[in-house]
Length: 403
Image (cartoon, rainbow, N blue to C red; front, side, top):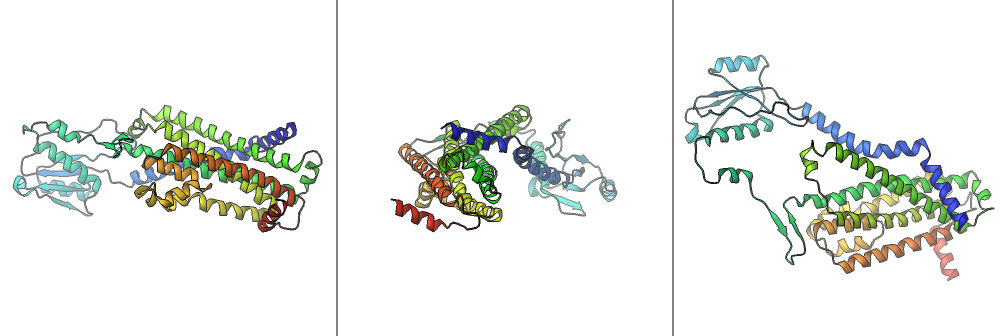
């Protein structure tokens, strides 16, 4: 047991205490933060925020436009500047000072028709504020019962037929755990799982595995490597959790969307448990591949085979939305590669019976334990096969013979 933990400690240290690990670790949150930020910045910068001229021939504009003195970075506001004559508005537009100008005709209150004049079509960024501005002025002197409440809209509560699921209209937050799990699980497999696979192949290629096997058994070596890489994965999760917590603490008060962000803690916890158990299984499968292939290039190809089944729930997302307790959704829940995301999606869209959750957990634990045991057997068969690839068929054939 002592040797096993020494191997696990060595495997953990050789990955975590390297520049490559920390660069890759920090690159994930940076990528998911930077890319959307760059995209949003480009989108905002491409929006024409020049003022728009407004000629009010109907005399309905009596309220001053409400503009923020210090708009936020992502706020887009268009100023409507009044003109008394069309020549001045046209001159300002031709000079590029304005996007164009709008004419509100005398019969607006009966026709509700306006005229846009400019060298490009009126944009949605102009139409939205314009509708709101005109509505405010049309209703300025009207007495309408419950006007303020009507403008706020309705408060929607969602409830399943059996009453087991109740949530507010902001139930979009239940989709957050599946999104988080899919990102974390994919990153763990591509990171820690890839480290394990590559280390096994490299040690076979450079023959260092022969030296290691003189001091430790093949089962201890394989189990130690898997445990060490699971520790690497947990380290990744903890670092990412700290980064997210710090980001939420700093930006929560500044971004309205983050203020509303209150994910279901139970759903999040269960999703993480499924992900960790499935990662043990996936790491063991990658260890099996590492023990049976002879070249690093072959190992990289095996990673691709793992990614496809992991993302199966993404490819069949409409199934989970329309029939989360259907046959396909349940099959993917028991399939060890897709189980974390499948269960997270099902629990987000509907109530999954507690008994089924426990059964899926039990099945995943059995898959994980079986995969770890099989990884040890694969390592025993292929550990010294430096130039000869060990087929998986031969591995299972050997298991059948031993049984």
